[in-house]
Image (cartoon, rainbow, N blue to C red; front, side, top):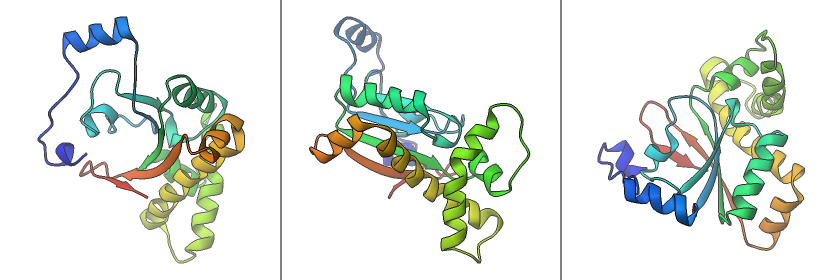
Length: 183
């Protein structure tokens, strides 16, 4: 991430030969990451990694419903990634909408409902915060909410954490600088 922040990326493992090697030899990522679908989070670029190195799940608000949890179980269980990063980001629209109790349409309401407990915790822990400051606190709480949801929903992930086969780390990206703060 330091290379991304400093605009000195190496862009490793992006050659045609690398693509062919992962086609014939399969993927062997070293980390599974769940993050927001926000287009300002180009995950492989942010960590200066290439083809087959990061198994990424993206969804608005970096929430973990059944599909996301199953995808992460695949990355951790089938691809054997020993590290799971749950990454939120500054200025997250889903968190901001949940904090503002925004009126939304369609399936977006379900996303905001998953973010809601994080917003409520941020309000309880920081009763004086409003606006952007509340959203920033809620972004961090939402990372922990996703960790909680994953562990609650997945016997496989819980077991791998208990057996020391999986480490889960929270993170927040500043979309302005690109810097990722690990929590």
